[in-house]
Image (cartoon, rainbow, N blue to C red; front, side, top):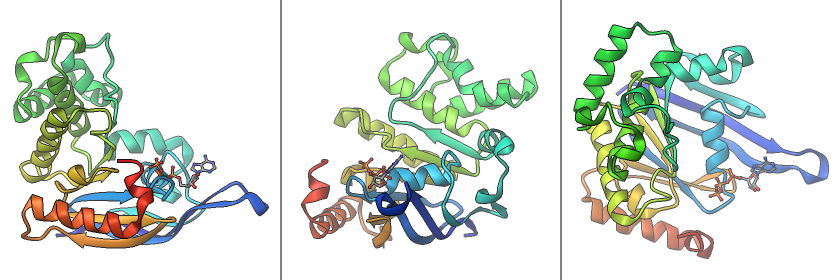
Length: 255
Ligand SMILES: Nc1ncnc2c1ncn2[C@@H]1O[C@H](COP(=O)(O)OP(=O)(O)OP(=O)(O)O)[C@@H](O)[C@H]1O
């Protein structure tokens, strides 16, 4: 597998002088094409900051973030929005579907903004909707669909522009356990069937157990990392719980 994302000596400070906070502290790791990686850590360990730097929403204080050959820390401000629309897909905790647009229009949004032709938008939206099992509700508005269908719409929207990398920020954070499981199954199938590369930030051991590798952050650094390999999801889940216990009570506080 090829290297898709390379984080090199990343640092992010907030504030300055005596009140400086080192949110990310000399962090380096790589993600290969086709990986599904989970980022875990206690509250304040730097997960959101890392995600914001990778998604180019925030700027790094030092270091580099390469997505294939592009150094994200070097992209001019004026080109960032376009870069994000073309290369990244996002799945948020609250799905952020627009109520006044149909499911099909919500999925098509990034393509519409990118001025993709109407025919191509139609083909791509239908293709991803079939893959995620929502092709019969494209004409409906979000309020006319179930929570599970809305989740799959959010996943389809993240996938429709064929992004190099999908970033998921606590995607199950606001869901009950059944909906969480359905969403995780969908995200897993995006990775396994559609070959999407996914980086997911989560507090939750159950969510993390769907990934192929988990990085644990502590004080902006990598505290531990391990691969699922041939382990069952249940075994991986138990292993994740063990590391959380090792990290101490602060992680459990937020479960
Ligand atoms: N805008 C900001 N200004 C100052 N400090 C910040 C800012 N954003 C984050 N921090 C600090 O940076 C550190 C990392 O925060 P971050 O939000 O990345 O953690 P997190 O792991 O995502 O936490 P949580 O799980 O609670 O969302 C924390 O000490 C936090 O207080």
